[in-house]
Amino acid sequence: MDREELKRKVFWKYFFRKGRFINFKNPELFTEKIQWLKVYDCTPVKTRLADKILVRDWIKEQIGEEYLKKIYGIYEHYEDIDFSKLPREYVIKTNHGCKMQRLVIEGAIPEDGYRDLFNNYLKINYAFKSGYEMQYENIKPLIFVEEYIKNTNELFEYLFFCFNGRPEFVLFASGKRGANICCTMFDKNWNNLHFNYGGNLHSEEIPRPENFDRMLEISAKLSKDFKFVRVDLHNVNGKIYFGEMTFTPASGYMKFSNSEYDRIFGRMLNLEK
Image (cartoon, rainbow, N blue to C red):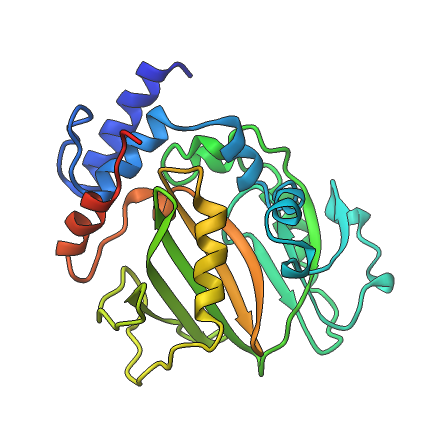
């Protein structure tokens, strides 16, 4: 697909999802600028870093192997997995998109339907699933089995929104796995901004994590070469783990519960740098 065709498709997809036209010459909103990045700033480096397997070598170079979870195996087909050699708890994932994973805990046997589920995942080109996220187009689909880091069965994620190498906001997500996840946006000084773009807001006060400054440092280092990237980190029992590099969160169609932040985020994203 050439750039002009991609531009047309992105233009109309955004219109149907958001109900307004994009001015590609002068985008203002954050959601508009994400569409601009899809068309004009999709590079081979982003493809490498969007690949959940290939990104690992880059993370080792940038911040060190200690921030990576263990991988027990990489497979071209679900049938290739030898479950007898896996620990009692692990996560089965694919490398080429989002929300294609299953958790196996407490020595459970993977469900029979997982084989068809994951082999169908491998047929998906994620670039075209949600809205022309072309950094995924040329990733070779693979299955991998990753270490499950247990934290009382609760999820703690910190999603850092980084603009031209500066982490300015962090979306904190937590909740029991399988139940509703709560998400709340904070600024870089851990001030609660009381909004999100999906899920429930936390009703309780969320304390600033002790290693928050280190997470800011990591996010700044990993984002320094990009106009925008969301650096996703896990923080489990006080230890930081790398999650993924997300260049087009929600494919740029997020609905901020405080709509003014679409404009605030947009002002922070300088497309000329």
